Image (tube, rainbow, N blue to C red; front, side, top):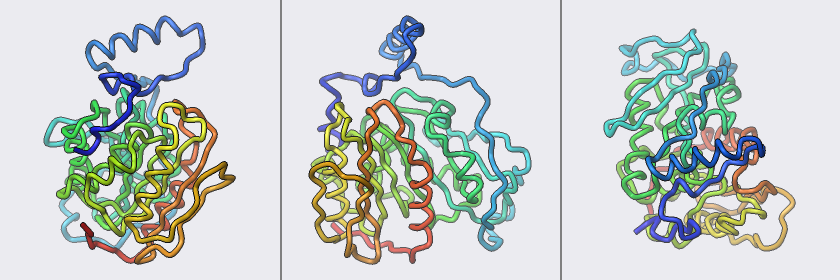
Length: 311
């Protein structure tokens, strides 16, 4: 079963998957937080104000009749809370000039281990720039890694689309660490989930062998980001990138050795893009690739939709 071979350094819970660096004076507080997390599944909760949203500088699509009845919720900049059918909490951020009858691209952001939706928003720092580009962003709470968690997280896109006007051909999955594993794992295992046009996965604890246990979701554009200094999941990203390239029928690419920049696989079917980016940051740190990641997603959104599935 997918995710069965996740390597969490022999730890039994996904809370132990990610350690957050803190200054030494916070050591006791962090130890208490981690202990509480191991006992009761507590989150890293960020009580700071949410990140500001922007006025979209890219116009949405033409008015859509099925969206007209939805309430207008723009012009406030406030976060919008929704709950999925299985009780997973999600915060949705829309452009400041959001129009409820116009379809927008959606980026579903899956959290690192133990991050609630607001801490996840701060960690990725996507909201302000994504909304400036006319993209709706949704952040979910973390769930312990399991197939049940994958199923529950897979509900997020449809739950957002039930409340907001979403262009279902322009959905992206995005995440780091646990979040990256969820983003990569959903398309091949949860066939009822909304199909992503793009996936951006960073520091994901998922191997090519894990992915091969699922179904090849061809036509999905994939950007894999992984650190050469990631000691928790060493070289997982290279294998995952090779899997996605094979799935997209790309020409092989030598990813061995130190890479100086993002490497793009060539010759992929249907114009699909598969890219591998080598970075330096430790596993615990988000590598700060939100700009290139959004560029990748926007490029994917401009492609012709490809909906075929290959066994």
